[in-house]
Each structure stands twice: as structure tokens, then as C-alpha cells.
Amino acid sequence: MAPNNNLTAILYGIEDLRLENLEIPKIKDEEVLLEMDCVGICGSDVHYLVHGRIGDFIVEKPMIIGHEASGVVKKLGKNVKNLAVGDRVAIEPGVPCRMCEFCKTGKYNLCPDIVFCATPPYDGNLRRFYAHAADFCFKLPDHVTMEEGALLEPLSVGVHTCRRAEIQLGDIVMILGAGPIGLVSLLTAKEMGATKVIILDLIQSRLDVAKELGADYTIAIQKNDSEGELVKRIHSLLGAQPNKSLDCSGAEATNRLGLLATKSGGVFVIVGNGPPEVKVPMVGSVCREVDIRGVFRYANDYPAALALVASGKANVKRLVTHHFDITETADAFKASRYGTDGAIKVMIHCQPRNKNN
Ligand code: NAD
Ligand code: ZN
Image (tube, rainbow, N blue to C red):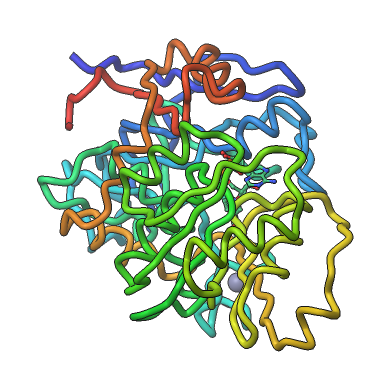
């Protein structure tokens, strides 16, 4: 039997994450009540636990954590037409205002009034029951698991990143960083037509997973490797220069490497968040017309992410290395934070495992 309490993971402040039983939320007319199933832990969740803030987003009052999630519809608001009770759904965690210039032009990820799960001051969804806008829930086909549903969140970042890079048939792609975001970008780039992908990281075990997922070449970077030598190794392994590069790490070192190694006239997309200010060899790259593009989450990317998974083309499940019950949330955060036993994606289950697959 599924537990009927609303056990909830609340971040009170730095190093202070508690489990409490809250009231089951009431829904608005355009919302559905969801019985939560899987919630993946993201680097940002860990960052809020450890530092209490990301840039200007500061945890100033207790905040429910979690935003990479899936659940089952339990109740419908009276205006909801796109879903039925019992539907298994992936939850797109940011609900924009739908009124501003950005929303109206389809770039709703840039909406200044977006309400995004577990970005202060808004609550997330690591809890047993949660209310969400029905039009930001995506019904999963029967053969797509709840775990895969939760993984559509990071995968959507990969889809958005590759769309920003305009990846197409024949592209030669360099990915910097083989964490969850580097790996989902790899899966997406391959499906969008990249013919050669090289991926770099400091951690060999992550590169091994990247190989399994289709990377053509990997480079394990050592902390004191010379930048010039690395650029040469990248070009020589590929037998060419990457015309699209994706920085999925955000370190100053990878910002620099991306600018230096990307082919003239190519595109360098930065998705990783590093220090707010960095020293980079800008002039040399802009004089070679390397386009630098940013990424902020995703907009209209969930449907493609779902299609990738439903068609069997993106093995996102390979990213999940650890499973915990919601009652073990503290241990789940430890595994994610310290990368215990090669942790990549840590999944928390709010219901007994595999209740809905
Ligand atoms: P992660 O920390 O698990 O992965 C980053 C990887 O980069 C790690 O494997 C790390 O070993 C590697 N790395 C660090 N320094 C490196 C170097 N010098 N050279 C090569 N590799 C190096 O994080 P993640 O969950 O994969 O997310 C990646 C980044 O993307 C994070 O900065 C995260 O905050 C950011 N992110 C941004 C968005 C967005 O909307 N822009 C969305 C999600 C995540
Ligand atoms: Zn808006």
C-alpha cells in the first residue's frame, strides 16, 4: 500500500534538511494533485544544502527541495482537460507567467516571474503529494518508467543545449564535463546528427559511462595538463576541430578550453555555471567568429526529451547509479554530494520502488 502521509523534504538553511509531514496541498482550477513518485537530486539541490544560495537566489525561509520529478495524477482541478486521474506524468518544474514578452515569444525560460520548483523563494516537489499546473505535466506512455519521467528534466537541459548549438548532421562536437548534463547532451547530440563526439572530464568513471552512451573519444584531464597540449590532443583525436562545443562543466578552465579548441566560425554553448567572473582568451576567439551562447534551463523542450526516451533512443536510465527511499533523503544527498561509489544521478523514491515502474 502506498503511504498516505505527505512526508516532505524541507531545507531550513545550510546543512539543515528535515523531513516533515505536511498537509496534502489544495489544488487550483488549472492544477492537478500529484502523488509523487521519483525525484532525482540535482547539483543545485546539493548547492542549496551546502551553501544556502546560488548567486542571487538565497534560501531565506524554509524551502521544499527537489525539481527533477514524476508523479501520478490523483485529482483534477475543474478546468483541467489534458489529463485524467491515474495518468503517470513527468513534471516540468517551472511555470511561467504566460503574459510577458518572453512567455509570448516562446522563451518562457527567461520569464522574470517564472515559479520554479526549489529555486528560492519557491517550494520544490520532494514530497509525497504536490499540486502543479496541468499544462506543465507530460503524460508518459505506459512503457516509459517513472524514473525516466523524472530524468526528462536534465534531458530537457541537454535538448535545449543542443538546440542552442544548432547541432546537425555531420557536426563534430566537443563536450566539456561528463556529469549528468554532459551525458544528456551527449545522448541528444548523437540523435541530432553529430557524427563525432569527444568528451572530457577529470573523472575516468564518468568517461567510461560516456563511452557506453556513444562518445567516440574521451580525454581524462589531469589537473595540471597544459591547455595548449590539450587543444592539440582534442584536434588530433578528432582528426578535425570541433565546430560545436558544449561546456557542461562551467569551470574557468573549460570556458577557456572551449574558446581555444572550437573551430573558426563554430559555436560554443556554455551551460555549466562557474564563477561569476572568469579570465578567458576572448579576442582570439571572437576574431575567429566563434559564437558564444548561453543556456538557461529549457523552453518547449520536454516533448522532444520525452520522444527521445519513448522511442528508446536515449538511454537516460544509465545515469542513475543510486536509489533511496524518501525516508533516506539525508543519505541520498550524501551520495550525490560526495559522489560516493561513482554516483552520477541519485534517485529518490517517494512511493515504494517500482509501484508504477
Ligand atoms: P556535475 O558537477 O555533476 O558535472 C560537472 C562535471 O564537470 C564533473 O564530472 C566534473 O568532474 C567536470 N569538470 C570539472 N572541472 C573540469 C575541467 N576542468 N575539465 C573537464 N571537466 C571538468 O554537474 P551537472 O549536473 O552535470 O551540471 C553541469 C553544470 O551545468 C553545473 O555547473 C550546473 O550548475 C549547470 N547546469 C546549468 C543549467 C542551465 O540551465 N544553464 C541547468 C542544469 C545544470
Ligand atoms: Zn512570463
